[in-house]
View (cartoon, rainbow, N blue to C red):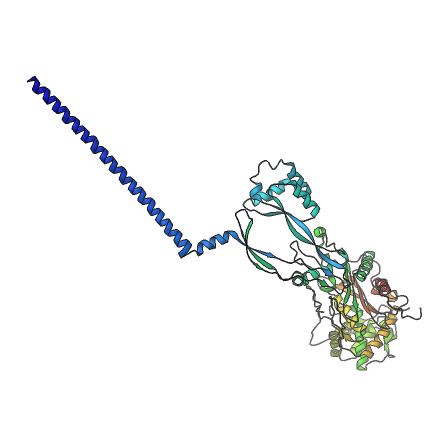
Length: 585
């Protein structure tokens, strides 16, 4: 019995172990199956992902690569424009009036600087601040404002010496960029005529602006590829620029210097608002000098006064006053209304209840006397006795109120009335230079045409190398007669005696005109003119002087502008070796 029980115990124990082993084997098998299934899912996911990525790459690289290329190009490709060095502006003898010099720009890379530690206490940064005259705080404010940028300007057009010093500081993120700057050797002497460029080298005033395209040429373009640090890694294409051109003006710097200094002296002496002087070569129509006062320094525009920048010779307009009287006399002679020896009643008279009178009283004057004494009464009576349309035509032929086409941007046309009906008062005042507006350059052209005995030659600011024959607009014999009459103005008893030049015959006309106020009425301010030609026996130069609003006791052209004419013309004639033609001296 006991033996039977013992066998049963071993049988049960064996069965238990077997069942236990079966349980663990089954559990192990299930675990292995689970792991295998999980790896299958994982591998499948990885395979599917790789397949999708591969297909995407194939799509982007082969089937449809454009969007990716465009995006890459957008980030790396750059188009750079570049110009040839701006052309030199020379005077007629080859002296440079505007040249380009090499300078440097001081630039910064904010992305580098902001990642540099302890820069605010760095003595080299303080040295940079002192050298550029920019507070250190302001420098860092600029950098912080463009912290996502890799390029900003800190200072431009810095001299090579200063740039060399800054380079030695070896500041991280600070680098130099080579650029150019315009330099004007004669400075303020020809500032308004030559003009200036902006900081990028583009003409913004004067000749620099008017001939900007000629001086710069056509920009070239370069396509490049940059890396993420901004370095050029590939030059892709190049469109060549067209060369810039040098420009040779008609201006004679020696004469320009004379004209400017004498004009400036007169403006300061008479405490005038401004002055303008223009010298023209009668034989060619070339402008030899064009000066304004006050002026400015084109090499330092920081303190430039805006109103002094404009070239008054072409922008300012005024009533020409008595300077137009020679045209009235010429037209009357041509029409046969008067003769050289005619005598005109010059007593004051009423026109439409308005009295026409002269500064000094004269019962009667010869035609020469009318010009010599600048008689408003005499010229008014002559104008009222002729078909007025004829006088209007002559004014137009001589270019009054008509642009000169000199090629300078900003030139005004002036004002020439186009009335259908002219009252006698309008006709009378028109004959002594009221009721129309001209520029100083138009007046200079008028006297150059008179000096060429009625041959109109276009004015030129560019040097002319071939003869200019011009076009006859008025019979020579009448112009010659009036030139001879105009000589009396600078002789004893004439209104322009102070314009006389010792040893030379000069034919001039002075003028004085009231200025018009802001409300359109005449005010007690005056413009004083003197316009003339020399030498009168064989005219070579036309010179006009305009002094605007002199503030002394005197304001007449004969007292204010005539002496300037004399001071300039005598130096011009001597400098140009013109033979004296006044045998009486």
